[in-house]
Image 1: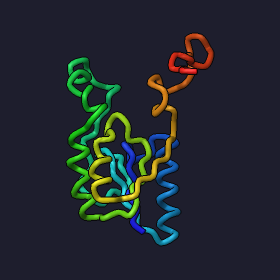
Image 2: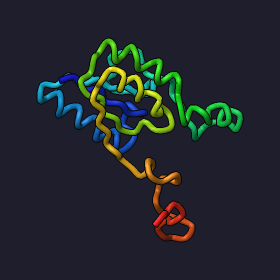
Image 3: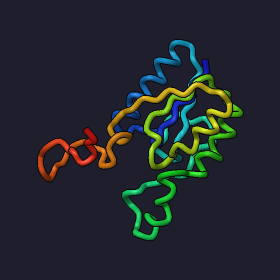
Image 4: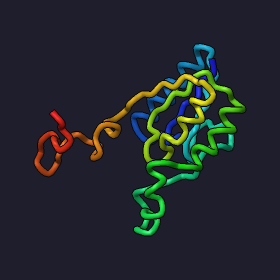
Length: 150
């Protein structure tokens, strides 16, 4: 089986990346073909293609760059364009999504769906359900209830 692992960072950055690399190794040992896709970075590990998107570091941008790039957090056109040749060339059976929010964005989903490729997602943190990302209010030293709809 061919599996495309999608994550914004393709180097050791945190727990999601460690999990993805360990899973990729285990899948390869089981006879599966695995490819990685995300942002370009000189620290990247085992990338065998040229289709990654440009590296975006939202923490180290001036206000003008942040304004220019704010729409890319919702829809990144480069992501959609760059995944197409990889999907056509690699022809994965499964696309496994990890942390793709903000930099890659859901812009890639229509291209995967158009090819009837199975999508699996591992949710590594609370960003998908909490705009603040933590589900915790550090100022009040208590769980955050601002989004609580109950």
